[in-house]
Image 1 (spheres, rainbow, N blue to C red):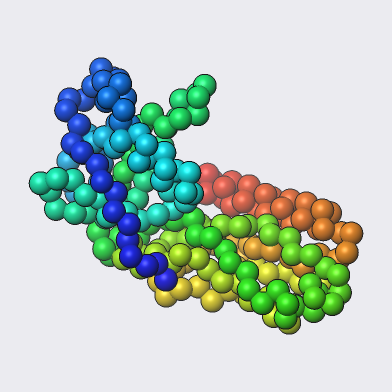
Image 2 (cartoon, rainbow, N blue to C red):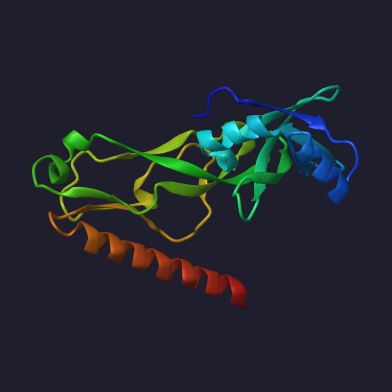
Length: 217
């Protein structure tokens, strides 16, 4: 499960609008907005270097943060969007959403594979692990966001397919996709690319069908 929630230190931004945002960037900051949680939005800014370091570390949009603003009570937030410069691809704005401890939020959770050496398909049969989904979007409780979900490869032979229904999800976590989608396969020697393409094709078709059903409803 998730460990200590990391702090995200920001400051209240003076003024709103494009002019204030440009001034914030000239001062070496990235402007942003904190919203949600039944409270009014707050214009904030974070030092560019601090945000850039967080982004380079990865999983910024999949991390629950403890937002610290001087003079205000700490609040838990997730980042819902980081806008980037179209030419330089550098962050120019971010949106943070407040969460209550019992709030549910959709988060992309990393899939971790264990016991490769105990899989006959990988250890003895020359097969390879093809990861269709290195991350899975789950609906989780804000106070209990898992670091990862675990796929146990022990006993799996060539041709095996691992689906979301095969995984013991953490308490309170639920897939945001209702159907039983594929996480990974154990491909036969020389068949890795073909099997991966087929699995990904099935995933794409399933998601397109689900989106179509949602649109009709």
